[in-house]
Amino acid sequence: MLSPLPWPIRAPRPWLAAAALSVLAAPAGADAPDPVHGRDLHERHCIDCHADIMGGDPTAIYDRENQRIGSLNELYEQVGRCRNSYGEAWPRSWVEDVTTWLNGHFYHFEPFDPVRQERSDGGVASE
Image (cartoon, rainbow, N blue to C red):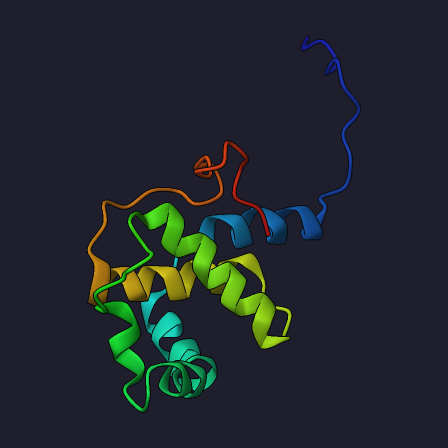
């Protein structure tokens, strides 16, 4: 004769199966920056201010002679400062999206994880 199970048998939990399936169904890299979204954000929120600063050519801010951005970390921090001056609360993922798009189109710095990257002043990049 078989011995009883060492744990109680419980009724199935459909919510548990649904939760497991939703995790498995999530696309790989769902948290990766989205440069297409970054481009769209840039066009909606950044172009007008940059055009004002640069006398009508918004992209001139990225290749001017006195360029202040020397690394991807500095670019991420600058996008964060622009976000703050814009006056709209952006989630960190939006800052990463814009940073990724700008880097791919203008700067071409080596990629990094901005959440874990140390800032140039010794702190850690934050939201």
